[in-house]
Image (cartoon, rainbow, N blue to C red; front, side, top):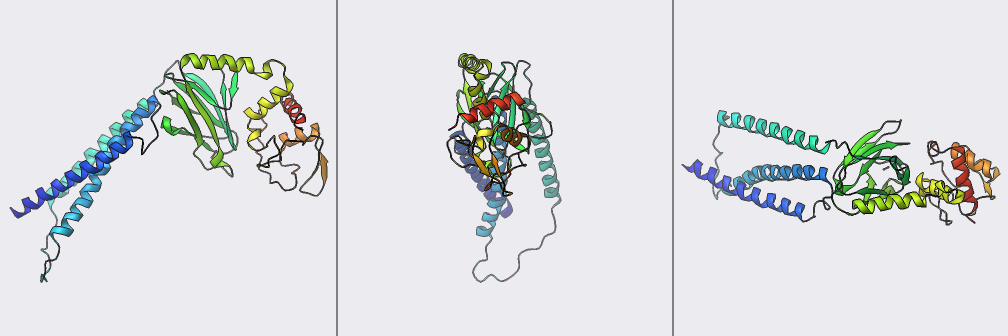
Length: 344
Ligand code: CUA
Protein backbone atom coordinates (compact mmCIF):
# COMPACT_ATOMS: atom_id res chain seq x y z
CA UNK A 1 0.00 0.00 0.00
CA UNK A 2 2.82 2.31 0.97
CA UNK A 3 4.50 1.70 -2.40
CA UNK A 4 1.33 2.65 -4.31
CA UNK A 5 1.25 5.91 -2.35
CA UNK A 6 4.81 6.74 -3.44
CA UNK A 7 4.04 5.75 -7.03
CA UNK A 8 1.00 8.05 -7.18
CA UNK A 9 2.95 10.83 -5.52
CA UNK A 10 5.87 10.74 -7.90
CA UNK A 11 3.54 10.34 -10.93
CA UNK A 12 1.63 13.48 -9.97
CA UNK A 13 4.94 15.34 -9.61
CA UNK A 14 6.14 14.15 -13.04
CA UNK A 15 2.83 15.14 -14.68
CA UNK A 16 2.89 18.61 -13.12
CA UNK A 17 6.54 19.18 -14.08
CA UNK A 18 5.93 17.93 -17.65
CA UNK A 19 2.93 20.22 -18.07
CA UNK A 20 4.78 23.25 -16.69
CA UNK A 21 7.97 22.76 -18.74
CA UNK A 22 6.11 21.66 -21.89
CA UNK A 23 3.70 24.61 -21.81
CA UNK A 24 6.58 26.97 -21.07
CA UNK A 25 8.52 25.75 -24.12
CA UNK A 26 5.42 25.86 -26.37
CA UNK A 27 4.63 29.40 -25.24
CA UNK A 28 8.24 30.50 -25.75
CA UNK A 29 8.12 29.03 -29.25
CA UNK A 30 4.79 30.62 -30.18
CA UNK A 31 5.73 34.05 -28.85
CA UNK A 32 8.96 34.13 -30.83
CA UNK A 33 11.32 33.77 -27.87
CA UNK A 34 12.94 30.59 -29.20
CA UNK A 35 12.70 31.06 -32.96
CA UNK A 36 12.17 34.04 -35.24
CA UNK A 37 8.81 34.36 -36.97
CA UNK A 38 7.94 31.42 -39.22
CA UNK A 39 7.90 32.49 -42.88
CA UNK A 40 7.83 29.38 -45.06
CA UNK A 41 5.53 26.45 -45.76
CA UNK A 42 8.36 23.96 -45.21
CA UNK A 43 8.95 25.50 -41.78
CA UNK A 44 5.44 24.48 -40.63
CA UNK A 45 6.60 20.85 -40.51
CA UNK A 46 9.89 21.75 -38.84
CA UNK A 47 8.10 23.69 -36.10
CA UNK A 48 5.62 20.85 -35.69
CA UNK A 49 8.57 18.49 -35.11
CA UNK A 50 10.07 20.93 -32.63
CA UNK A 51 6.72 21.05 -30.79
CA UNK A 52 6.64 17.25 -30.42
CA UNK A 53 10.27 17.16 -29.30
CA UNK A 54 9.68 19.85 -26.69
CA UNK A 55 6.96 17.68 -25.09
CA UNK A 56 9.29 14.66 -25.19
CA UNK A 57 12.09 16.74 -23.64
CA UNK A 58 9.74 18.08 -20.94
CA UNK A 59 8.56 14.54 -20.07
CA UNK A 60 12.03 12.94 -20.00
CA UNK A 61 13.49 15.76 -17.93
CA UNK A 62 10.57 15.54 -15.47
CA UNK A 63 10.83 11.76 -15.31
CA UNK A 64 14.46 11.93 -14.22
CA UNK A 65 14.44 15.12 -12.17
CA UNK A 66 10.99 14.37 -10.66
CA UNK A 67 12.03 10.93 -9.37
CA UNK A 68 15.29 12.39 -8.11
CA UNK A 69 13.60 15.27 -6.28
CA UNK A 70 10.95 12.98 -4.79
CA UNK A 71 13.59 10.53 -3.60
CA UNK A 72 15.81 13.21 -2.10
CA UNK A 73 12.91 14.69 -0.14
CA UNK A 74 10.81 11.63 0.83
CA UNK A 75 13.54 9.01 1.36
CA UNK A 76 16.09 11.24 3.01
CA UNK A 77 17.87 9.96 6.10
CA UNK A 78 15.68 10.58 9.13
CA UNK A 79 17.18 11.81 12.36
CA UNK A 80 18.92 8.95 14.19
CA UNK A 81 18.48 6.56 11.27
CA UNK A 82 21.66 4.48 10.81
CA UNK A 83 20.82 1.25 8.97
CA UNK A 84 21.19 0.60 5.21
CA UNK A 85 18.25 0.77 2.83
CA UNK A 86 16.42 -2.39 1.69
CA UNK A 87 18.28 -4.47 -0.88
CA UNK A 88 16.45 -5.53 -4.05
CA UNK A 89 17.54 -7.11 -7.29
CA UNK A 90 15.92 -6.15 -10.59
CA UNK A 91 12.26 -5.96 -11.58
CA UNK A 92 11.20 -7.92 -14.67
CA UNK A 93 8.04 -5.87 -15.21
CA UNK A 94 10.03 -2.63 -15.25
CA UNK A 95 12.67 -4.11 -17.56
CA UNK A 96 10.02 -5.08 -20.09
CA UNK A 97 8.31 -1.70 -19.83
CA UNK A 98 11.44 0.37 -20.37
CA UNK A 99 12.34 -1.72 -23.39
CA UNK A 100 8.93 -1.59 -25.07
CA UNK A 101 8.04 2.07 -24.40
CA UNK A 102 11.28 3.52 -25.87
CA UNK A 103 10.90 1.17 -28.85
CA UNK A 104 7.43 2.58 -29.51
CA UNK A 105 8.79 6.13 -29.05
CA UNK A 106 11.65 5.56 -31.52
CA UNK A 107 9.29 4.09 -34.13
CA UNK A 108 6.93 7.05 -33.65
CA UNK A 109 9.78 9.58 -34.06
CA UNK A 110 10.96 7.76 -37.20
CA UNK A 111 7.44 8.12 -38.57
CA UNK A 112 7.04 11.84 -37.78
CA UNK A 113 10.59 12.49 -39.04
CA UNK A 114 9.91 10.75 -42.35
CA UNK A 115 6.52 12.42 -42.70
CA UNK A 116 7.91 15.94 -42.17
CA UNK A 117 10.97 15.30 -44.37
CA UNK A 118 8.76 14.18 -47.26
CA UNK A 119 6.73 17.38 -46.89
CA UNK A 120 9.81 19.61 -46.65
CA UNK A 121 11.24 18.05 -49.84
CA UNK A 122 7.89 18.03 -51.71
CA UNK A 123 8.38 19.12 -55.32
CA UNK A 124 6.16 21.70 -56.95
CA UNK A 125 6.68 21.40 -60.73
CA UNK A 126 5.96 25.10 -61.23
CA UNK A 127 8.75 26.16 -58.83
CA UNK A 128 10.78 29.19 -59.87
CA UNK A 129 14.45 28.39 -60.28
CA UNK A 130 17.14 30.55 -58.71
CA UNK A 131 20.82 29.73 -59.04
CA UNK A 132 22.51 30.68 -55.78
CA UNK A 133 26.27 31.16 -55.73
CA UNK A 134 28.21 31.42 -52.49
CA UNK A 135 31.80 32.56 -52.36
CA UNK A 136 34.24 34.03 -49.87
CA UNK A 137 32.40 36.13 -48.74
CA UNK A 138 29.28 37.07 -50.62
CA UNK A 139 26.17 35.71 -52.29
CA UNK A 140 24.68 36.17 -55.74
CA UNK A 141 21.38 35.07 -57.17
CA UNK A 142 20.70 34.31 -60.84
CA UNK A 143 17.20 34.03 -62.23
CA UNK A 144 17.68 31.97 -65.42
CA UNK A 145 13.99 32.31 -66.35
CA UNK A 146 14.35 36.10 -66.48
CA UNK A 147 18.05 36.49 -67.33
CA UNK A 148 18.68 38.70 -64.33
CA UNK A 149 21.23 38.63 -61.52
CA UNK A 150 20.89 40.16 -58.09
CA UNK A 151 22.88 40.43 -54.89
CA UNK A 152 19.61 40.31 -52.94
CA UNK A 153 17.38 37.23 -53.02
CA UNK A 154 13.92 38.43 -54.02
CA UNK A 155 11.12 35.85 -53.97
CA UNK A 156 7.38 35.96 -54.63
CA UNK A 157 5.24 34.85 -51.68
CA UNK A 158 3.34 31.55 -51.81
CA UNK A 159 5.35 30.31 -54.76
CA UNK A 160 7.86 27.51 -54.40
CA UNK A 161 11.43 28.56 -55.19
CA UNK A 162 13.91 25.91 -56.28
CA UNK A 163 17.26 27.19 -55.06
CA UNK A 164 20.15 25.53 -56.86
CA UNK A 165 23.13 26.05 -54.57
CA UNK A 166 26.75 26.13 -55.66
CA UNK A 167 29.98 27.28 -54.02
CA UNK A 168 32.99 28.49 -55.98
CA UNK A 169 35.69 28.04 -53.34
CA UNK A 170 34.95 26.35 -50.01
CA UNK A 171 31.85 24.96 -48.30
CA UNK A 172 29.25 27.56 -47.32
CA UNK A 173 25.76 27.08 -45.95
CA UNK A 174 22.52 28.77 -46.97
CA UNK A 175 20.43 29.62 -43.92
CA UNK A 176 17.43 31.92 -43.52
CA UNK A 177 16.27 31.24 -39.94
CA UNK A 178 12.68 32.34 -40.71
CA UNK A 179 12.48 29.71 -43.48
CA UNK A 180 13.78 27.06 -41.02
CA UNK A 181 15.54 25.01 -43.76
CA UNK A 182 19.30 25.00 -44.26
CA UNK A 183 21.57 23.53 -46.92
CA UNK A 184 25.33 23.42 -47.52
CA UNK A 185 26.81 24.76 -50.77
CA UNK A 186 29.62 22.60 -52.12
CA UNK A 187 32.55 23.52 -54.35
CA UNK A 188 33.74 21.36 -57.23
CA UNK A 189 30.75 21.85 -59.51
CA UNK A 190 28.36 20.02 -57.18
CA UNK A 191 24.87 21.50 -57.10
CA UNK A 192 22.58 21.09 -54.09
CA UNK A 193 18.85 21.81 -54.25
CA UNK A 194 16.77 23.50 -51.61
CA UNK A 195 13.04 24.19 -51.95
CA UNK A 196 11.44 27.08 -50.11
CA UNK A 197 7.90 28.40 -50.31
CA UNK A 198 7.91 31.78 -48.55
CA UNK A 199 4.57 32.57 -46.92
CA UNK A 200 5.12 35.99 -45.39
CA UNK A 201 5.91 39.23 -47.22
CA UNK A 202 8.88 40.85 -45.50
CA UNK A 203 12.61 41.44 -45.23
CA UNK A 204 14.91 38.68 -44.07
CA UNK A 205 18.57 37.83 -44.26
CA UNK A 206 20.47 34.85 -45.58
CA UNK A 207 23.56 34.13 -43.54
CA UNK A 208 26.34 31.65 -44.07
CA UNK A 209 26.12 28.87 -41.50
CA UNK A 210 29.40 27.13 -42.27
CA UNK A 211 32.73 28.49 -41.04
CA UNK A 212 34.37 29.56 -44.30
CA UNK A 213 37.28 31.80 -43.45
CA UNK A 214 38.11 35.25 -42.19
CA UNK A 215 34.89 37.06 -43.12
CA UNK A 216 32.47 34.17 -42.53
CA UNK A 217 30.52 36.19 -39.97
CA UNK A 218 29.94 38.98 -42.49
CA UNK A 219 28.72 36.70 -45.28
CA UNK A 220 25.12 37.89 -45.42
CA UNK A 221 22.69 38.99 -48.10
CA UNK A 222 19.20 40.45 -48.02
CA UNK A 223 16.16 38.27 -48.68
CA UNK A 224 12.98 40.08 -49.71
CA UNK A 225 9.65 38.32 -50.05
CA UNK A 226 7.17 40.26 -52.19
CA UNK A 227 3.60 39.75 -53.35
CA UNK A 228 3.33 38.24 -56.84
CA UNK A 229 2.49 41.63 -58.42
CA UNK A 230 5.38 43.40 -56.67
CA UNK A 231 7.75 40.61 -57.66
CA UNK A 232 6.77 40.89 -61.34
CA UNK A 233 7.31 44.63 -61.12
CA UNK A 234 10.76 44.07 -59.55
CA UNK A 235 11.70 41.72 -62.41
CA UNK A 236 10.65 44.29 -65.04
CA UNK A 237 12.58 47.00 -63.22
CA UNK A 238 15.69 44.79 -62.98
CA UNK A 239 15.57 44.11 -66.71
CA UNK A 240 15.07 47.80 -67.57
CA UNK A 241 17.91 48.84 -65.25
CA UNK A 242 20.48 46.28 -66.39
CA UNK A 243 23.40 48.39 -67.69
CA UNK A 244 24.91 45.36 -69.42
CA UNK A 245 21.84 45.22 -71.68
CA UNK A 246 22.04 48.88 -72.71
CA UNK A 247 25.78 49.22 -73.53
CA UNK A 248 26.58 51.19 -70.40
CA UNK A 249 30.17 49.95 -70.05
CA UNK A 250 30.97 51.55 -66.68
CA UNK A 251 27.57 50.72 -65.20
CA UNK A 252 27.91 47.16 -66.44
CA UNK A 253 31.37 46.89 -64.85
CA UNK A 254 30.00 48.15 -61.55
CA UNK A 255 27.16 45.64 -61.69
CA UNK A 256 29.50 42.76 -62.54
CA UNK A 257 31.81 43.74 -59.67
CA UNK A 258 28.86 43.74 -57.29
CA UNK A 259 27.24 40.54 -58.61
CA UNK A 260 30.51 38.62 -58.54
CA UNK A 261 31.34 39.59 -55.02
CA UNK A 262 34.39 41.78 -55.80
CA UNK A 263 33.05 44.60 -53.66
CA UNK A 264 32.90 42.41 -50.56
CA UNK A 265 36.70 42.71 -50.35
CA UNK A 266 37.58 45.78 -52.44
CA UNK A 267 36.06 49.07 -51.33
CA UNK A 268 35.39 51.90 -53.79
CA UNK A 269 35.74 54.68 -51.19
CA UNK A 270 39.30 54.18 -49.95
CA UNK A 271 38.42 51.96 -46.98
CA UNK A 272 40.84 49.09 -46.47
CA UNK A 273 38.84 45.85 -46.24
CA UNK A 274 40.36 42.50 -47.28
CA UNK A 275 41.98 43.60 -50.52
CA UNK A 276 43.30 46.94 -51.81
CA UNK A 277 40.65 49.63 -52.34
CA UNK A 278 39.75 50.42 -55.93
CA UNK A 279 39.61 54.14 -55.27
CA UNK A 280 42.39 55.80 -57.24
CA UNK A 281 44.09 52.47 -57.89
CA UNK A 282 44.19 52.72 -61.69
CA UNK A 283 47.49 54.15 -62.88
CA UNK A 284 48.94 53.99 -59.36
CA UNK A 285 52.42 52.64 -58.61
CA UNK A 286 51.95 49.79 -56.14
CA UNK A 287 54.73 48.33 -54.01
CA UNK A 288 54.51 44.54 -54.07
CA UNK A 289 55.26 42.10 -51.28
CA UNK A 290 58.38 40.87 -53.15
CA UNK A 291 59.86 44.39 -53.08
CA UNK A 292 59.17 45.29 -56.69
CA UNK A 293 56.87 48.03 -57.94
CA UNK A 294 54.11 47.66 -60.50
CA UNK A 295 51.97 50.18 -62.34
CA UNK A 296 48.31 49.28 -62.07
CA UNK A 297 47.22 49.12 -65.70
CA UNK A 298 44.71 47.03 -67.63
CA UNK A 299 47.11 44.10 -68.00
CA UNK A 300 47.91 44.04 -64.26
CA UNK A 301 44.21 44.09 -63.28
CA UNK A 302 43.34 41.35 -65.77
CA UNK A 303 46.23 39.23 -64.50
CA UNK A 304 45.26 39.85 -60.85
CA UNK A 305 41.71 38.67 -61.50
CA UNK A 306 42.83 35.60 -63.42
CA UNK A 307 45.71 34.72 -61.08
CA UNK A 308 45.27 36.58 -57.81
CA UNK A 309 48.31 35.07 -56.08
CA UNK A 310 50.87 36.23 -58.63
CA UNK A 311 51.61 39.79 -57.52
CA UNK A 312 50.46 40.67 -54.03
CA UNK A 313 50.38 44.30 -52.98
CA UNK A 314 52.59 44.93 -49.97
CA UNK A 315 50.65 44.82 -46.70
CA UNK A 316 48.00 42.41 -47.98
CA UNK A 317 47.62 38.65 -47.80
CA UNK A 318 46.57 36.58 -50.77
CA UNK A 319 43.01 35.83 -49.70
CA UNK A 320 41.36 36.10 -53.12
CA UNK A 321 40.18 32.71 -54.37
CA UNK A 322 41.55 31.75 -57.80
CA UNK A 323 37.98 30.93 -58.72
CA UNK A 324 36.80 34.51 -58.08
CA UNK A 325 36.90 35.52 -61.72
CA UNK A 326 36.41 32.20 -63.42
CA UNK A 327 32.85 33.00 -64.45
CA UNK A 328 33.93 36.29 -66.03
CA UNK A 329 34.85 36.60 -69.70
CA UNK A 330 37.68 38.91 -70.80
CA UNK A 331 35.03 41.33 -72.11
CA UNK A 332 33.31 41.37 -68.76
CA UNK A 333 36.62 41.98 -66.98
CA UNK A 334 37.22 44.85 -69.42
CA UNK A 335 33.92 46.36 -68.21
CA UNK A 336 35.09 46.05 -64.60
CA UNK A 337 38.39 47.75 -65.54
CA UNK A 338 36.45 50.64 -67.15
CA UNK A 339 34.51 50.94 -63.88
CA UNK A 340 37.73 50.93 -61.81
CA UNK A 341 39.15 53.71 -64.05
CA UNK A 342 36.26 55.99 -63.02
CA UNK A 343 37.06 55.63 -59.29
CA UNK A 344 39.28 58.64 -58.72
CU1 CUA B 1 30.51 31.26 -46.18
CU2 CUA B 1 30.71 31.01 -43.82
